[in-house]
Image 1 (spheres, rainbow over the protein chains, first blue to last red):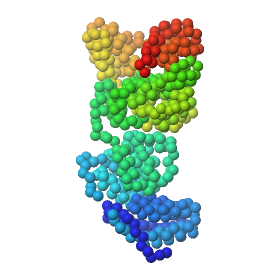
Image 2: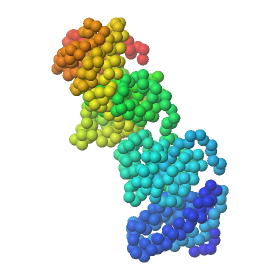
Image 3: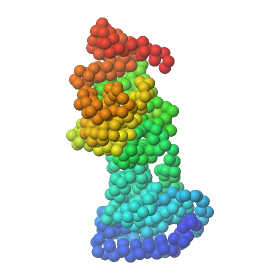
Image 4: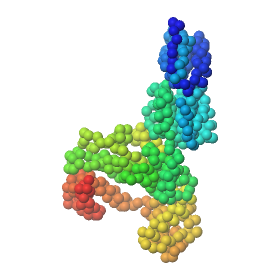
Amino acid sequence: MSDNKIVVEVDEDLEELIPGFLENRNVDIEKLRDSLANNDFNNVTSIGHSLKGVGGGYGFELMSELGAAIEQAGKNSDTDLIAEKIDKLSDYLQRVEIKYI
Amino acid sequence: MAMKEQQDPSKILIVDDDIDVLNLLENWLSNEAFMIKRAKSGLEALNIVASFNPDMVVTDLYMDEMDGMALLNELHSNNPLLPVIMLSGQAQIPDAIQAMHLGTSAFLTKPVKQQELIDTVKRFLPNHKNQSSLAHFSKDIVYQSKPMEDIIDMASMVADNDVSVFISGPTGSGKEVLAKAIHNASSRRDNRFIAVNCGAIPEQLLESELFGHEKGAFTGANLKHEGLFQAANGGTIFLDEIGDMPLPLQVKLLRVLQDFEVRPVGSTKTFPIDVRLISATHRNLEEAVKKGEFREDLYYRLKVVPLAIPHLSERPDDIPVLAEHFLQKFAKQNSQDKKRFAPEAMKYLKKMPWPGNVRQLINVVDLCATLAKNKSIPLNLVKKAVNDEPVYIQTLKEAKYAFEREYLLSVMRITHGHVANAAKIAGRNRTEFYKLLSHYDIQPAAFREKLETD
């Protein structure tokens, strides 16, 4: 994992919503880790599905892609892959830098 | 992006159990100056609908408690015209369900893009401020009762909407009158309204009547024939007794409705058509679907907006205005002074069971107007007319006569008045066929002239 920033362009109309939105994603990561620890694959799938649906709308395309991957891995109960994708999502959230346009 | 100014904005209810989705949708739609309310569940949405009265609902499909599909069904059972935009993952909604809500609903795949959502919202928002079609209805349809008022309200909303309208109701209740009124209230009114009774025409002829045929498509088809769908282009086609349409033809009709094009019998070419379809039947189609006699997919396509005309005896408040209307018509047609029913006679009319519906009422009114010696029609005359009036159930002879005549007209239309060909189709020799035509007072020349003007 690198320390490079990932710049995401977001519509300036959404500026007010972004801090709350990103905070909720950190909550998602915690929930994903808890669910994985409890082998609650249904919950993993459901959170992945929500991430897929919401990320791209705010401009975070990679978040939607990771959400879709988590949803699929959840359906397959693929513990390793889920863990890998959660780490990627967490890394992404730490490195993301927002440019309002 | 500046907020757009708009007076009297359209109201949109957004439903999702994810707060971030609600925030996003609200942001996008408020920027377009819509008035937004939000609900975090299907049940909350139903509560809000009652007071907020939205012009549209945008909902997620995948929610706990009540999902988007259940919400859609609940919303449409109260108001089949409320546009609903459903956001869902790919391939989660079966075609049959989509078809059922076609015309009023859109299904968008998540993650949805801003422009895609806004374009769809704008496309499906009804132009509900336009009340002119209601005014059109009042001159075509005579009513006073609450059930009819509800039907006319609904019909006037859909008149200009091009959605498929399905009219159910017992024989003689005025299904064709309503269909015609919908046509007259729509922007298609300057084009043709063509009514076809699917029950009165044999299967092979029906296909040719509806979709046309090429020269030589079958024995006797010596000329090319344009079908009624093409003839109605730009206008409305009314398929009455659609429940009697044979299954093979149902498949073909479904294809026409899906592709908006017709292929005449024996032709390799298809022709684009722009026709609004209104269908009707006195049969219980839902039952026919269960028995496998009617295609389910076609049924859902036809009944996007179902209008059920109640039996005349279930709407007695309409009887006085209808009787008055028919008396006026009779007086005008026969150039005499208008008569009226004595009060006790009217009371009797209102309490009658009317097994033959409005059609029977017309017969009784005409009979009374003919027989009444004075301006006022007394009770005893009404009673006599009701008892003497057998027309509401045709005799076998009358029914046979009507069917044969309708059949001969179809054959003559298809052959453009070519008697030898028509006789071949009907399986009669020419001499016999000429006799039949003369018996039914059908002039072959009338059909030939039509060809020349085509």
